[in-house]
Image 1: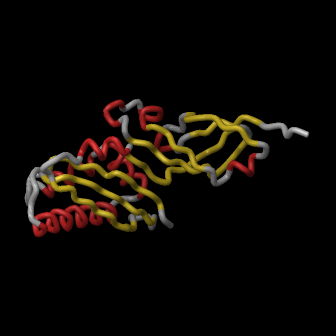
Image 2: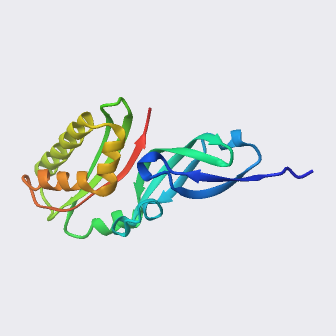
Image 3: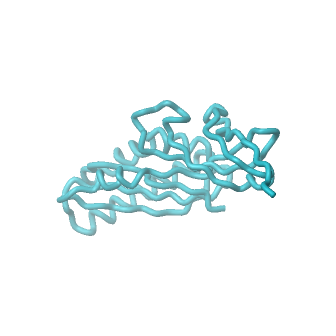
Length: 181
């Protein structure tokens, strides 16, 4: 005997205007809870300049035929990271666990490139400057505001400005964020 499935609309959180971002099939609404959905930023904000950003949503509540979600992180397409790192540059990765003002635990993974191959001391100094800036910004803002800064690229510009004092930065991208707790 086949089970009757029903279509559910997946709705983005308030910070993205509660737009419908997709549909899914399920036998029971309880089976949707906890399901994750990956959506391109273009579908939510119509910002084509950041087409390489994908948002990760988790279904938290189902009422009727609509499934409400919350943002649990973002990811940058791997092709974008490959494009950033080129020959004769130095790749710097910063991976850190932070706590926002509203006590949300996040893991932020940042990648940037220094304009030329440099020694380890300059690379370490640039990494430390980026680490401090991200941590300071996270402590001063709540989760939604921090994610808006990351998604729009404003935090990346602050990192570039801060690290340019140490050595010229070619490219900066926060490649992944994820809620850890």
